[in-house]
Length: 73
Image (cartoon, rainbow, N blue to C red; front, top):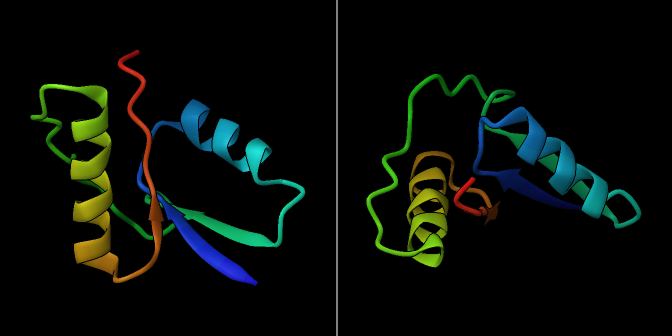
């Protein structure tokens, strides 16, 4: 089974991503489950840049494959 870290503490976003992957052979963890209490600064100029910032920060901290999203909501 593949393990992915969801680089979000937003419960709604985590739930949405879990639903997308529900029929796949993927074990999803989120930042809350790993005890992450901080914030990841979203300083990019685009949604894509912010998602990449979050993914890189989470990977750097936890050394796991990461999925991140920034929809600007």
